[in-house]
Length: 126
Image (cartoon, rainbow, N blue to C red; front, side, top):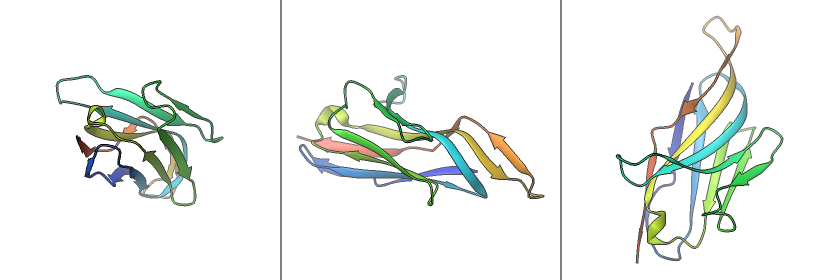
Protein backbone atom coordinates (compact mmCIF):
# COMPACT_ATOMS: atom_id res chain seq x y z
CA UNK A 1 0.00 0.00 0.00
CA UNK A 2 1.28 3.45 -0.92
CA UNK A 3 -0.08 6.96 -0.48
CA UNK A 4 0.31 9.34 -3.40
CA UNK A 5 -0.41 13.06 -3.09
CA UNK A 6 -1.26 15.46 -5.88
CA UNK A 7 -2.48 19.02 -6.35
CA UNK A 8 0.52 20.97 -5.08
CA UNK A 9 1.35 24.16 -6.94
CA UNK A 10 2.71 27.70 -6.75
CA UNK A 11 -0.02 30.29 -6.16
CA UNK A 12 -0.44 33.93 -5.24
CA UNK A 13 -1.49 34.94 -1.74
CA UNK A 14 -5.24 34.69 -1.37
CA UNK A 15 -5.44 31.78 -3.75
CA UNK A 16 -6.80 28.28 -3.20
CA UNK A 17 -5.74 24.73 -3.90
CA UNK A 18 -7.23 21.27 -3.48
CA UNK A 19 -4.71 18.69 -2.37
CA UNK A 20 -5.51 15.02 -2.96
CA UNK A 21 -4.09 11.80 -1.61
CA UNK A 22 -4.98 8.29 -2.76
CA UNK A 23 -4.07 4.95 -1.25
CA UNK A 24 -2.98 2.53 -3.94
CA UNK A 25 -2.90 -1.24 -3.66
CA UNK A 26 -5.57 -3.74 -2.73
CA UNK A 27 -7.09 -1.39 -0.18
CA UNK A 28 -10.26 -2.43 1.58
CA UNK A 29 -10.68 0.51 3.93
CA UNK A 30 -8.85 3.33 5.68
CA UNK A 31 -9.64 4.27 9.24
CA UNK A 32 -8.16 7.73 9.87
CA UNK A 33 -6.64 10.12 7.37
CA UNK A 34 -4.51 13.13 8.19
CA UNK A 35 -2.48 15.96 6.69
CA UNK A 36 0.80 17.35 7.99
CA UNK A 37 3.12 20.00 6.64
CA UNK A 38 6.80 20.80 6.91
CA UNK A 39 8.20 24.23 6.09
CA UNK A 40 11.84 23.12 5.78
CA UNK A 41 13.49 19.68 5.88
CA UNK A 42 15.03 20.62 9.24
CA UNK A 43 11.80 21.47 11.02
CA UNK A 44 9.42 19.02 12.62
CA UNK A 45 6.30 18.21 10.66
CA UNK A 46 3.28 20.12 11.87
CA UNK A 47 -0.12 18.49 12.16
CA UNK A 48 -2.76 20.20 10.01
CA UNK A 49 -5.96 18.16 10.09
CA UNK A 50 -7.43 14.70 10.69
CA UNK A 51 -10.62 12.99 9.58
CA UNK A 52 -11.87 9.80 11.18
CA UNK A 53 -13.65 6.87 9.60
CA UNK A 54 -16.89 8.37 10.85
CA UNK A 55 -16.19 11.66 9.11
CA UNK A 56 -15.24 13.72 12.17
CA UNK A 57 -12.74 16.39 11.20
CA UNK A 58 -10.35 18.24 13.50
CA UNK A 59 -7.98 21.04 12.61
CA UNK A 60 -4.93 22.84 13.86
CA UNK A 61 -5.92 26.25 15.18
CA UNK A 62 -3.61 27.82 12.59
CA UNK A 63 -5.73 26.56 9.68
CA UNK A 64 -9.23 26.19 11.10
CA UNK A 65 -11.75 28.10 9.06
CA UNK A 66 -9.57 28.21 5.95
CA UNK A 67 -8.72 24.54 5.33
CA UNK A 68 -11.23 21.71 4.91
CA UNK A 69 -10.40 18.01 5.04
CA UNK A 70 -12.72 15.50 3.39
CA UNK A 71 -12.63 11.89 2.28
CA UNK A 72 -14.06 9.67 -0.43
CA UNK A 73 -14.03 6.07 0.73
CA UNK A 74 -15.10 4.82 -2.69
CA UNK A 75 -11.85 6.22 -4.07
CA UNK A 76 -9.66 5.47 -1.01
CA UNK A 77 -8.81 9.15 -1.03
CA UNK A 78 -8.55 12.16 1.23
CA UNK A 79 -8.60 15.81 0.22
CA UNK A 80 -7.49 19.09 1.72
CA UNK A 81 -9.14 22.22 0.39
CA UNK A 82 -6.89 25.15 1.26
CA UNK A 83 -8.31 28.64 0.87
CA UNK A 84 -7.05 32.16 1.35
CA UNK A 85 -3.45 31.02 1.26
CA UNK A 86 -0.67 33.17 2.65
CA UNK A 87 3.12 32.88 2.28
CA UNK A 88 3.22 31.33 5.77
CA UNK A 89 1.39 28.32 4.33
CA UNK A 90 4.33 27.53 2.05
CA UNK A 91 5.40 24.00 2.91
CA UNK A 92 5.60 20.41 1.82
CA UNK A 93 2.25 18.80 2.63
CA UNK A 94 2.10 15.12 3.58
CA UNK A 95 -0.91 12.87 3.87
CA UNK A 96 -1.06 10.07 6.41
CA UNK A 97 -3.29 7.06 6.92
CA UNK A 98 -3.64 5.14 10.11
CA UNK A 99 -4.95 1.58 10.07
CA UNK A 100 -5.42 0.51 6.50
CA UNK A 101 -7.15 -2.80 5.81
CA UNK A 102 -5.92 -4.40 2.60
CA UNK A 103 -5.60 -7.69 0.78
CA UNK A 104 -2.20 -9.35 0.82
CA UNK A 105 -0.53 -11.26 -2.01
CA UNK A 106 -2.58 -14.35 -1.19
CA UNK A 107 -5.67 -12.17 -0.73
CA UNK A 108 -5.70 -12.64 2.98
CA UNK A 109 -6.95 -9.64 4.92
CA UNK A 110 -4.21 -7.62 6.56
CA UNK A 111 -4.04 -4.42 8.60
CA UNK A 112 -1.24 -1.91 8.75
CA UNK A 113 -0.79 1.47 10.34
CA UNK A 114 1.10 4.76 10.08
CA UNK A 115 1.41 5.23 6.34
CA UNK A 116 2.88 8.43 4.89
CA UNK A 117 2.93 9.92 1.43
CA UNK A 118 6.10 11.41 -0.04
CA UNK A 119 4.77 14.94 0.17
CA UNK A 120 3.87 17.66 -2.29
CA UNK A 121 5.02 21.26 -2.38
CA UNK A 122 2.73 24.22 -1.94
CA UNK A 123 4.38 27.59 -2.53
CA UNK A 124 2.54 30.84 -1.88
CA UNK A 125 3.99 34.13 -3.06
CA UNK A 126 2.97 37.57 -1.87
